[in-house]
Amino acid sequence: MPQINVQDLSKTYRVAERRRGLVGLWRGLFYRTHREIEALKGVSFSLDRGELVGIIGPNGAGKSTLIKILCGILMPSSGACEIDGRVPWTDRIRHVARIGVVFGQRSQLWWDLPVIDSFNLLRDIYRVPEVRFRPTAENLISLLRIEQLLHQPVRQLSLGQRMRCDIAAAMLHSPSILFLDEPTIGLDANSKLALRDFIKNLNRDNGVTVILATHDVQDIGAQLLLLLQPLAGLVDIPYRIYFAHLSAGAAIAGIALQISWTVLFIVLGRLLLMHTMRRIQIQGG
Image (cartoon, rainbow, N blue to C red; front, side, top):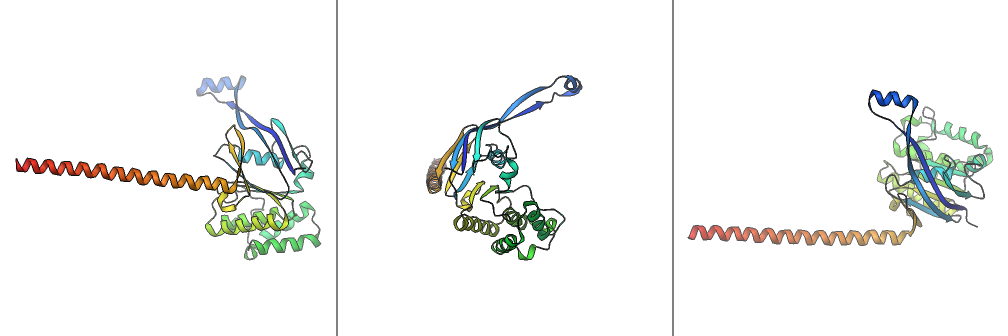
């Protein structure tokens, strides 16, 4: 039985339209018109335990919306979803106790507190016994190399440092599924490498199912890619095949560029030669 089973998920937002001018403002007090925005349409897939999956797609394709539905933050307009036999948005308390979530644009750490205090607060929230919490925290701190950051307020951390601390915070209660939404935004090369190694080791050694929505999936090395197209659902693509297509496309583009430059130089050379010959004829005549 798959750990995650999604069938025909769709999400539509109803947005009020605002009219311009004073007349429009006055009419808006008594009568409003709305339009619907389809953020997600007809998404279906199933995943087994221990998979490392990347969700890719252009901006506005619905990657973050899909992650929020899987986490139980949003309720879909239609469709069905079960994770470990639970519906995320109806059984949210038990569901969130078994998942870890990291959003690249937001932090679950307390801004003015030292990092270690946020970890201790999360331990109390998730009711993790001290006997289990201490070795887990020490292991995460070592793997993510954040020993020197534990006693700094979160507001004093750089983006890469905060992201590593956020990932550690998401794993303190030993979840079976980790959702990552744009985890590499703004990170430098060293931070991306450290994050990539941690995610791959976590997936391989602990069997944690990892689902990440990102534009930098090549830096993570997912086993399977789900290509999310705007209002067109998902397409399953093996990781190697996807990047083989990218490499082939890059090679073709490079050859086309070289041919274009060669043709351009030939044309310019002939034009220059014709201009030179014409000047010689004029001077000789």
